[in-house]
Figure 1 (cartoon, helix red, strand yellow):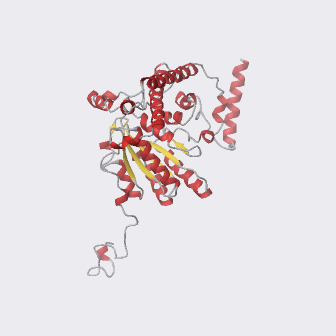
Figure 2 (cartoon, rainbow, N blue to C red):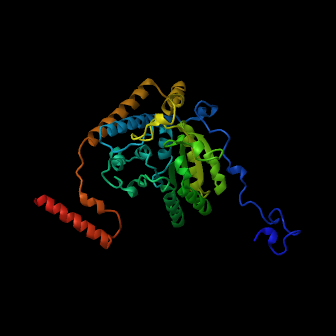
Figure 3 (cartoon, rainbow, N blue to C red):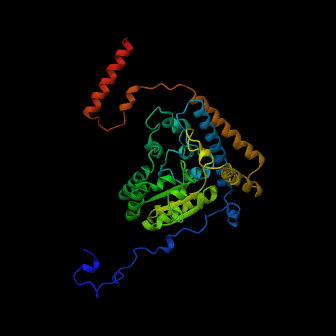
Length: 378
């Protein structure tokens, strides 16, 4: 039955909703700026905190070296796969350092650097990608959720944890990281919808690095920006230069403060670029040209910060060298420990599946144990 066929339709039919209808939220304050927010190279850089910027620089240098070492370990067969964040280090570092100790980080599979910057042992961060263990670390101890390989599944988990924390009265904010490809998943919609309705203390950071493996953003969405998607859920959308670590940290800091004070969630889109291939199994030359990559290399996050700090007298050659030396020490330690063959217990595959093992799982464990015992005795 159409509207025209309804009883009383016709002359009394309204072409618009009744006067009592009104928008639930004023959309204007939720809209992102037309251009990504920047600090480096602008007058806002005059207000930079020197100590914080030096720490950012040291972390960026360490992060770049971490990426290089992890990639080398993959080529040596010590890692099954590694999704590099070369070019995206500013997003990773800012996300890790914006959180307080009691807060939670919900990373994707590409965000091992963010976990390391938050304090996780680099070997533990890479354990999942090595194939040795379910996660490699205790999420509760580090307040870092398990690395999520399925796209966007960590987002509803972040909302659930943040909402539960608020109901308990805990001072906790969850920061959930996702790539541009993850915004096309249903979990993205469900997470943002629930977060906004519940006003959950959660921040969504989308690292828009241009491609979901080989699919460019233009083939994923017709939205003006990914940050514009926030408006449809009733939360603010922020657009930021993802290679400007000072800008990313400032925007995330504002979003975290808003969440902590009861203002609800924020969607932040950081415009960045994946300089290296999707993973070691990907041939990026099949879907993008060298000129595009070189253009983004000119907007490198490490070089951007280093130039700004050097020009302002915040960073000198000695500090730059000290950061490089510390990064090399980290890489050497990571290399040495990753080159040691781990001692693994096959029975661990049954651990941490359920709080209490099911009957079927116990049967499978008994079967494997019997096979292992027979192998030892043969």
